[in-house]
Length: 119
Image 1 (cartoon, helix red, strand yellow):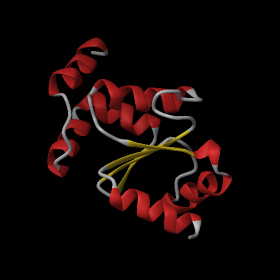
Image 2 (cartoon, rainbow, N blue to C red):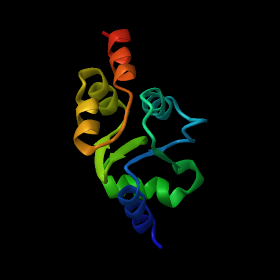
Image 3 (cartoon, rainbow, N blue to C red):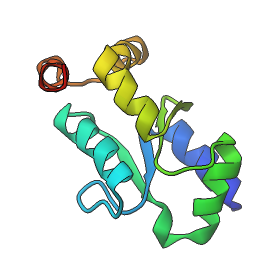
């Protein structure tokens, strides 16, 4: 199976996927840590893919999304964005709306607390 096939299979068979440096319990870069931290704090169940473990996946995800940086968040097979976009969406409430529209369970109170703390 090619890297593209593996990536496509991963994003279509899991509701929420974060391609990141490291894992959700041990991120290996600040940007990955921020996005994983937001998802963990909001109680979102997500699949983490450590791009550092496989160079083909690390390059393949950039080609797949046509996005040059890691981390990359996918929700129900749709590319959402990287750290800056996820941060902006979290603070604006757009991430909540996306999760609601896609049927992804998350802690609405936790999401509100993030906005309060950064308001």
